[in-house]
Amino acid sequence: KAGVTQTPRYLIKTRGQQVTLSCSPISGHRSVSWYQQTPGQGLQFLFEYFSETQRNKGNFPGRFSGRQFSNSRSEMNVSTLELGDSALYLCASKPFGLVRGGYTFGSGTRLTVV
Amino acid sequence: DQQVKQNSPSLSVQEGRISILNCDYTNSMFDYFLWYKKYPAEGPTFLISISSIKDKNEDGRFTVFLNKSAKHLSLHIVPSQPGDSAVYFCAASYSGGGADGLTFGKGTHLIIQP
Image (tube, rainbow over the protein chains, first blue to last red):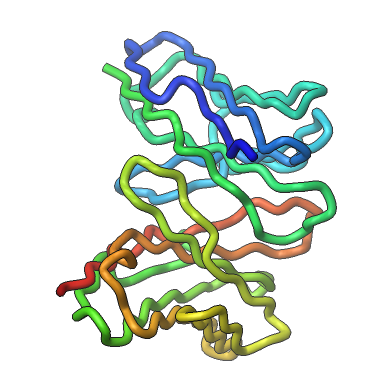
């Protein structure tokens, strides 16, 4: 079965712009999480969605937001981009009922802010 | 404040020998720990996990050990193979709050030398 699909794979944006990244989870997975990976900070948790509701949010400014649709697909949005937002953004999904671990990650979207 | 620490950014091991990757955590609320493996340009892949009620979990060549009193876990790979060369992330979570955001370490780059 298809894995977690993230689009686009690569993105270049200008400081001050906004960006929307998309994630399609594995079919049947209802929980979707987003992570930011940078060389200095490693992988940092952004937020998690389940059944269109945000269940938890990491320590990121309000410029970072997300949503989940009824088909479990998720988007994250970053407004007023800063140079420091350049990172690999990873989406992960897991099935309902699997409470712990077992996340399947997508290949990520590489965002470069210039 | 980094709650999950991987103090070795890189580790070089000869093929066929044992690779030992270490991870320390500071938050005593963490009760579930995972190891992920990541190749360049791909998302992390789940390797193995352990609950805090156990001190060892084994899966083929991979064994994870947990020392709760020392807040330390380690991943042993025996024997090491060239395909094991990747970045390994330690991650932790806790059941409080009802969400499953993972806290990751910054990763250890394992290099298996022929």
